[in-house]
Amino acid sequence: MVQKPVISGNKITIPSNLEYLTDVDNFIESTLQSYGTDESTIADIAISVSELVNNAIEHGSKSGTAKEVTVEINRQNDKVQIRVRDRGNGFDPEQLDDPLADENLLKEVGRGIFIVKSLMDSVDIQTSDKGTTITITKAIK
View 1 (tube, rainbow, N blue to C red):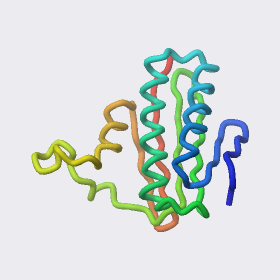
View 2 (view 1 turned 90 degrees about the horizontal axis):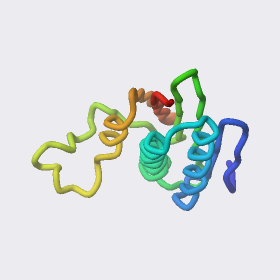
View 3 (view 1 turned 90 degrees about the vertical axis):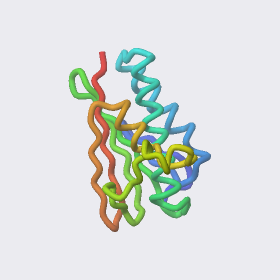
């Protein structure tokens, strides 16, 4: 269990608490800048990672600060791959409500994964009763 953000190479681990979202954002943005990534792509990736970390804290870990969220970033030639992992109970991605359905249009929640899928080139969700790992990939210049 971590009590504060821990950065180790290409990975940051935070307590499951929204107050550390800024630390993740700064880590992701500075890493992408070091890759020479353009600002528009950085913005898309930062929004996506923020959505995923927010979901990991609120839904995965249920804001249980004894749990942690890990974000790992790797560059592979002309693309970047980011993994967000929580230690929650998992979820069924097939059971997510369609945010574009009439009955969901005015809901204040339920758009995170939809937004991430629209901004990233690929989104892979692996989930079990021991946690969820979401891997996103985006081409960078």
